[in-house]
Image (cartoon, rainbow, N blue to C red; front, side, top):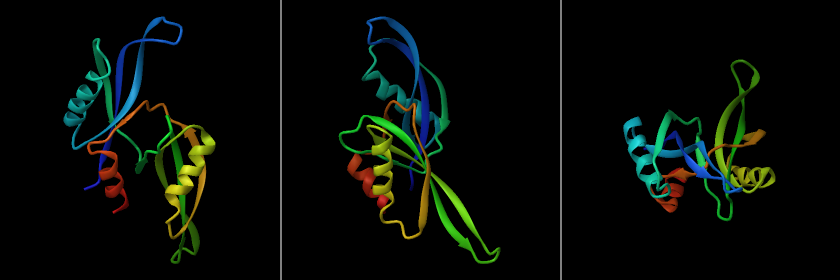
Length: 153
């Protein structure tokens, strides 16, 4: 069974780099089987990091086909990958878009990590867009090794 990722927006008070306390709303990803489980999981995960009160203001299904974490990277990037296929019936090239969430330090790393993820792809593909994602952190249901095995299976 493939993971369903939910984007959960959490509102809480945070002290910024200048030492000023402000209210922020930040998106996080959790994998879950339902909206109810996603809410429960984000409550559990955030309770470990936030000692004060917080509020879940939105939960929606995330539009990512795959999520790939990389070591020594601290930001998340959204990579749009277009798979190219030739449609014999219509006689023209067809594109199918995939959206990957890739962990990297900058756009160059995100591009290289996307190429690394796609290296075993048989067909042709292009990477028309990479942008930094506002996602703060990703909380998989299983640990990373199990998640990677599941994704490559």
